[in-house]
Amino acid sequence: MDSNIIKLCRTANWYQELADHTFPTSFVKLNTEELKALANGDSEGDVADEIQQRLKLPMSSFPGNCFVYTDTVAPTDTERFEGKRGAVYSPESAWRFLTESLKVKTAAANGEIEHICVRPFRRMTKPREFRLFIKQGKLKAMSQYWLIRHYRRLEGRKDFYWQEAHDLIEKISWLLPHPDIVMDIYFTSDNQILIIDFNPWGEPTSPLILRTWDREWGKETGIKLIEPPVSVGGDVNVSF
Picture 1 (cartoon, one colour):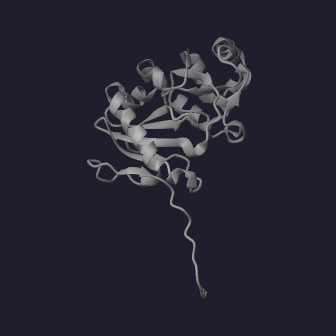
Picture 2 (cartoon, rainbow, N blue to C red):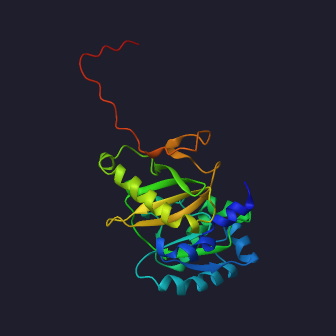
Picture 3 (cartoon, one colour):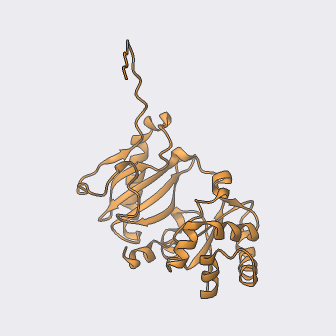
């Protein structure tokens, strides 16, 4: 994958232009030694102590729990994310769960990380998270993000969600880090759209319900949701 595209997708590189469309966020720049400690999964030691000290101020500036991640990947593959969606209260636990994440350690080892990012923790409702597929600055498709099950409540609002997302991209297309890009968003309870992050266009970014990148991107596909389960009625004879 083009390293320049990965760099453009780093939160620190697009935050200033799009701060009014995302979570308030603070950044802690990591030096070479600290990035090495992160890649090695060093949860303790002098380097860990220094990073935790520097995390105190940005974490204390937000009320309650924080969500702590890096500018290209979040520790979504950890027990903490599975159990508490990544909510952390102390710098010590924030650093520990970053060093436990294989995704984070791999990205650090590959030189894809520059900052630790800190934002207020928000318990997000899974049906309101979506992935947007933007080609040449235009919204071409939109997918339900969490492919867990069919959410009946989405069916009645899918046209609304598509139009709101479409209007947002029309408004901010000139601020996007790249004209061909994938953007993950969240709809708040009052229908505000918050940008979660950006991902490079194409593999290895998942196309989710769209299933493949090999498709005609010149036309709008619209919003894609998991289909409702099929119910079978009448007399059904099954033989094995």
